[in-house]
Amino acid sequence: MHELASRTGKLARFLVFGSFVSTASNPRDIDVVLVMMVDFKLEDAPRESRTLFSHSEADARFGASVFWLRDGMLSDEMMQMLLETWQTKRDGTKRGIVEIKS
Image (tube, one colour):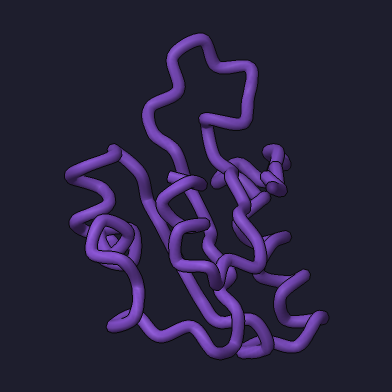
């Protein structure tokens, strides 16, 4: 998935969280956040990358919950709050978030 997102030439951050980033022996799925550069346009993305930007298509093809936004849409404080929300499990405990860099 990172490679497909990178092919756009507009990937700013690639974050992975959920059961995939845990000690679970068989994680159920992978949860991904794509932060795209401000000037990213979906219509300019390579065809093979576009599946990543449709939540239902990414789930069907990769078994992944993919969320995306453009860099700068959220203030640094709001982005931190969003990451903390994603990091918090239903029982209130914290899970890992990993950023993959090229």
